[in-house]
Image (cartoon, rainbow, N blue to C red):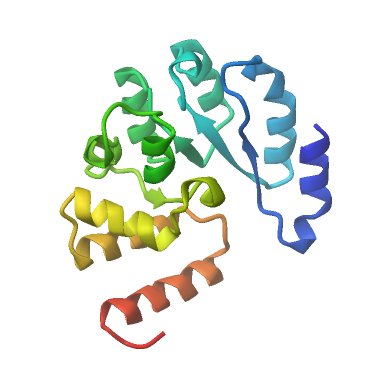
Length: 192
């Protein structure tokens, strides 16, 4: 609850959301119900590390996490099919970290086997992310390069992914408009 109280305290300084992360194999996620309810009550958005490892991918636990009404989910690796359908129906933003998931061996195989391939054709905004840049040595630009190389994405595909990601940011409409205009200029080849 302390983290949520701090987030509420510093909303005027730009704090817009809270995140649940940590060792997903330890602890009971229902312990966070009151904290997330308080965060939501105060207008904070919610993102959750979700199904990052098999031990945290039990359907009951995942449904508990979804009951907190998150706007975004991180990793979404070991997700049962019924939960995938629920995520797609809610059109939740998905924070995908290709390098982290491959190098930490959170998925089987390499980049081409990453679940980005599954989610890219669903209705969910995809947010390519870095995770532990100092450990995995992959910048955000490199994550986009990896997605392009391993999933045969062209410039238009990448611009579309960026566009849907803008809709999932925790910024206000003014910030989204600014980003849309910047992306539009980029897609036309203008200098930003």
